[in-house]
Length: 151
Image 1: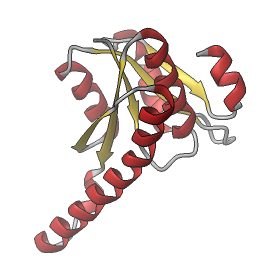
Image 2 (image 1 turned 180 degrees about the vertical axis):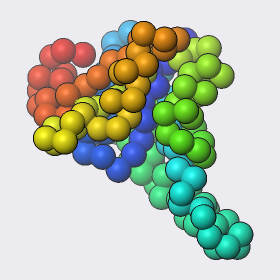
Image 3 (image 1 turned 45 degrees about the horizontal axis):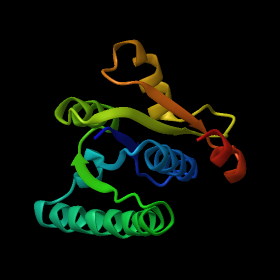
């Protein structure tokens, strides 16, 4: 089964990327894999504190994932898969794509901020010619209705 890989983070544009990936998966019989990356700078403390922070980060990610997963299952019949990795986000996204041959499309949300589309979109779009899968960038300002019409 072809999977749409979408990144779960705290950005507002993440919501549109989730919607798009879910709708495309529902319409094409695919799946959704949600990747959350815990950056290494969050654990530059004492070992005991780092372990506690890591556990708390995983709990936050799992709670956030469950909100999206419930919506995907209940509204669109898509049962997403959660993957949590630790490291630099762009490198971990590429590693996940290389490790899972079922991933067929990477879906990222672009920020509407004047500073640019966001660090992941910037990094990965620059490298898009060498990516092993197509990259879909979903505008963060796209309305829910327009997104549904496109997907």
